Length: 488
Ligand code: BG6
Image 1: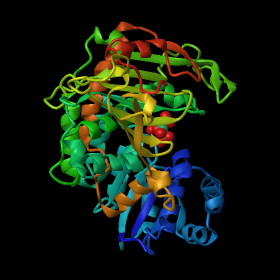
Image 2: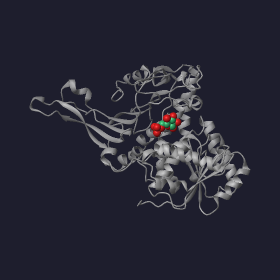
Image 3: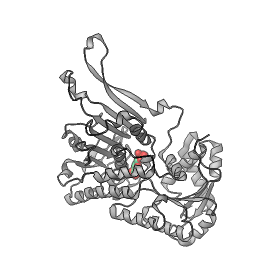
Image 4: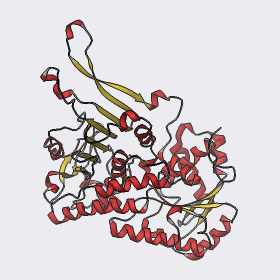
């Protein structure tokens, strides 16, 4: 039996027939039900504006649920879960439709309104919920992207804030729900071993790589307006950077953690015009191979236009201007159509201050802490030991002290990020959600980069699908006398 109690709620999912809802949200709710983490009285309202009958839409949701949950689907849980579902036709901008919605919602339990819709309608949904008397006590959940720059994100946030206070607004960054990201907080703040070393005296640099093997997957229309900087760096990679770089919070409360993250974002050094060529690399994939099969370039993808200069890859060096991190670069790298799916953080510790081993071994001397988010979630600390054997003298070797979550805790399934996030919304815990000032500070930093790119007019550098990005992304780090870990 779960040790957590969750209050009953009415979970209203706007955009219930969209890709995110079908692929991630319904399966996550199903898993919560299976884990005994949905209250018996919790109901789910699937809201969409598509024509068709309730029966047709519910059948479609069920079919997709079965396909996304796959073989592990349990029939008893599935039946219990499907019985919670009601479909309601709502044109998000039409206030009249919310009157019917209000009747379905009732007043007995808390409403959670999840917006899996374009951010452009968040304001209208909030206003209509309020007009229909559905705003009081309601929690709203906003999906990314919230805007495409500081100004547009402010507009969205302000429109929502007219009706919902910050303490009932939950902004999703699904990376914050990933198991290993959670573990970062435990690793850093439950082990004095690391925290005492966690600064510029002991750490030389940090790498954050979020590589995807997939290309654009039919999302060209959205992606081409965004690009990899807005789609991945502005949110996921900067959030990871914050969790690595933040000072210890006073406690685990949402605001203590978020206060510390905001400080990091505000301390990020803007990238200078010269830095745009030495510190940042934009790339766009051209045709190549993925998993041994030929794949088209970005400009040849379905529904593409052949002129786009949107980046599908970014590598950059970020510097944090504070006492803890002065002189410690954070190298960030993310791209589509990389050789494999890999999200990992590598903390490189400095060399010992006095070196006594054979000079040719010097290169490998430095401890590394590798935090693997996906796949094979785990943490590994590379330490130097001596090669075994009489004939080896003092020959060193680097080996891992390893904690592999999927092996170590084999019985436990690693939950999807959305399961944790939905559970935390139901529990009213904002820890894993992004506050308005965080989003704005992240946009501010990204905006100056985007403006610099626009001004320079430089096209992104081509890289072959299935490679680790343009050659200049290697030069970016070798210029500082380093290389990407495992390069990988
Ligand atoms: C999303 C981006 O936020 O994250 C996608 O919009 C990207 O472009 C996805 O593919 C990656 O998430 P994950 O969990 O698969 O690493």
